[in-house]
Length: 346
Image (cartoon, rainbow, N blue to C red; front, side, top):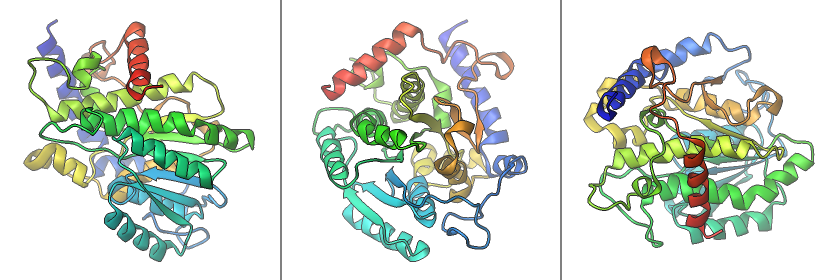
């Protein structure tokens, strides 16, 4: 079976599966199967009419890319539930506007901004130092930030910006450096979590060789959508590998379906009409927000979630079976993890 044929099967099944599950229609269908309350929007506070009963009082929640889209929804939800929220954002202006919006909607003043471009490793380290100076433990880290580019861009370190922001700096390095604070949460009997906000685009490929994934291979044109796909597949593998540590931390990947956000506009442009009906932003974020308050005992470490449900990680086989096309071997996964470590200089 040729590469092109397998890619075609993978793409077709991603689209068919997505039309059923990733759209607004899919969300409304899934909600009917929930066995716990669901909110109609992110900013319903603890004890208010329509609240889902979650209380995050006393918890520290860190959200990257918190000034828009899924990040803004999750930061708003955490603040509404009484958490001490840290917003990691690139733009001071957009972050301050978003913070004001969150505080006004939730009456929670414990919302703080830390400026950092998570694709820049030095900025990730500085952000971590600032967090560690303020908090001895962190209860939830949401790795949501990242860019999707049509033209190749490099960070000041010389890394391709998409994989640097979504995966290397924004997921691996940030999690690695904040592990002591997450472990401190576990030691205090809490349920610390790391949530990598990924994408169903990861269904389209396995993790390729490091030079392909990082767009450093010779004589190959840059493909921004595939660079994004590789970063998102990498997050799924990263959660699986970190979950094997049994360190008291729950590592999850989750995706928001096809939601009406700037990221979808960037990825699909005029073709986003094929994804209709797109989810509202909250419909995309609701399943992600649920993970913030879910007990570790009801979550499966290393799993991939959509709308409170564990999802398959591969759809490339006949009739929606897993197949082999998007799976990596143990040696490939080992090389991937080693390259992440080398890329961060740790």
